Amino acid sequence: MNEGSEAKEELRRGLEGVLAAETRIGYVNGSDGKLFYRGYEINSLVEQSNYEEVSYLLLYGHLPKRGEYEEYVKRLREEMPLPDEVLSLIKNIGGRTHPMSALRTVISYLSVLDSMESDSSTKNQERIGISLIARMPSIVGAIHRVYSGKEIIKPDPELGYASNFFYMSTGARPDPVESKIMDTALIIHADHGMNASTFSALVTISTMADMYSAITSAIGTLKGPLHGGANERALKMIQSVGRPENAEKVLKVMTDKGERVMGFGHRVYKVYDPRAKILKRYAEYFAERKGNETFKTAQIIEELMINKYGERGIFPNVDFYSGMIYDAMGFRTEIFTPIFATGRISGWVARALEYSTENRLFRPKALYVGEKGPRKYIPIQDRD
Ligand SMILES: CC(C)(COP(=O)(O)OP(=O)(O)OC[C@H]1O[C@@H](n2cnc3c(N)ncnc32)[C@H](O)[C@@H]1OP(=O)(O)O)[C@@H](O)C(=O)NCCC(=O)NCCS
Image (cartoon, rainbow, N blue to C red):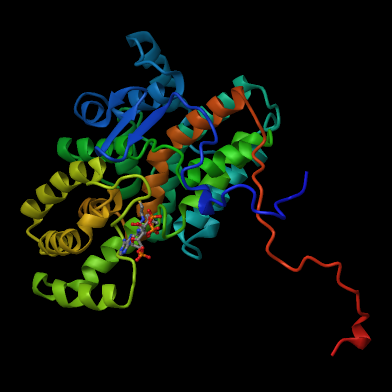
């Protein structure tokens, strides 16, 4: 079989619409704007559940009974504190690189401390996955602190996952509303179909590499501005527009130049992203509490974008309002994508474990459009 020298099959750039795996974990209904985890609609989980429970649900397929829940939470709590060596690495990296690069490096480094890394049994890879889920808030929190020139804060065993993450990142214990908003942000980012970073994790695990490698791949992929990096850029864009009355003019300049407006559009959703709907309510809550103009400007940008592009299926996505909320809760802009990663870690781990139980090495083809050859080799001294 030749490697794609003739286009007998349709070329699907970016594998768009190609079915490449089966999953029972999550489902995105792009035409109705609905998102399900294991059959539960995202809104009902946000209203009634918490991140620990959702994480368990993604991994094991059912909501935990009380005993299962307590055991899972205990395990997360025990794994949360970071080894001194990792804290030193985070301090050493300091503010020299983007927090997503720091996060990628730290996750990869954790494998150095794990002598069982390459035992590819599902049990062992599940163990690694759960320890990464537990450690993610501590790592991102520590990166945030060091990046901001502040002391690292150890987890508080009395706090839940989302509240601990807030505390280790900002240095303040969240009030009940902040705690709920943090928890919601993590839940709505926990899983989202075969997105680029999840696919990266699956490609890596399909080679029978370990969970550290799979999550490192996923983090590298999430970093890009077309994926996780959009939240940071969306807030910067809204802030650069400034006052609400500037929005029309600035947006016209951007769209006339053919620039993509960050926080809008989605490969799957062609209606309003259900996650953006949830976050918009919280952005409004902070706008009322803190009285800033950013939310007003964002609303005008949303209106203008929907008027211009709504018919083409371009609406606000999860990244449009998330940055505004994180900003209001005291997170630096550069940490927005690592917050996304902190939520998504459960989805990455769950899907990598699921895929590895019926593993098939990913190996698509590329259509060769280069010189057919054979070309004559010319020695270096004879080349013009
Ligand atoms: C996410 C994204 C890559 C998905 O795009 P997609 O479904 O693959 O759509 P395409 O890239 O094929 O774009 C289709 C058309 O819509 C336009 N479009 C898509 N998103 C746009 C945006 N945010 N701003 C302006 N135009 C946009 C494209 O320019 C293209 O126009 P054309 O047909 O005239 O060339 C895209 O919407 C985007 O770049 N958004 C901004 C980044 C972002 O917010 N990412 C976070 C996603 S959760």
